Length: 285
Image 1 (spheres, rainbow, N blue to C red):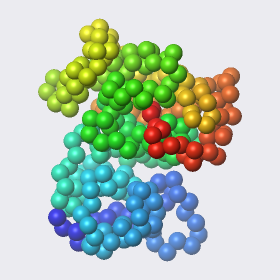
Image 2: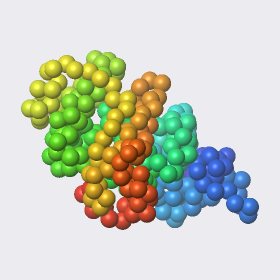
Image 3: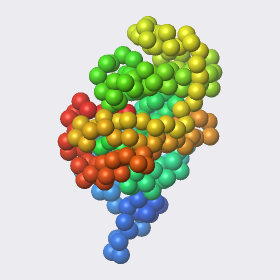
Image 4: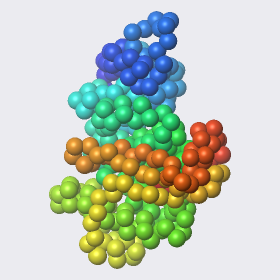
């Protein structure tokens, strides 16, 4: 671990980014060419004091999750992200984990959708990053770790996970999740331990999943029309659309109100309500 070099690297990456690159206003009186420390801290969900200590080469060793947040805030490419982990003395996260690298271009596109709920998830349905409206709509999906980071795993092992959708839609979503997972597992190949272990664990934990998996249905979930149950606004009909990375391992999801439904007005209220009415337990995407 080299905290001094880590701090210098963070500062060099901060200096090269314009506020507009990450969806922040520039303003006429900026004293630094790139982002300010407080802006990086805000984007990464860290305190200004903590980030300042890191840049100064002091403070505690950052966690893997915190490093992932800094990598995304600073729009690091894959080599730069890996370098950041090496400097911090942390192992580079495996692909598909909650700390996976997100392509800067995908993050840039998401930052240009401030009025649209959007998020980036892996092909195993692990949420990597959400904007504020996505958290307001479906809750904080990035708060989970380990196998529970996958929505598919929680869907079949934790009944409370399903309350985000009307009960009448549960069978449809269970089938769609399973078919999409089968496509992802095949695309990753038989040597991918993460996908194989998840399927084995689900077959053991859920008779429903085991039955659906045995049917061998396959379908990539590219777009969908969903009914989402919001704790304050009630049932919201949305269109859920996807943009896939080149290798298919990540997708940018965004939600638009279904035309001809009250969802347009509900979306307007969503930006006002934000997450203030959401309980810690709420949040299932």
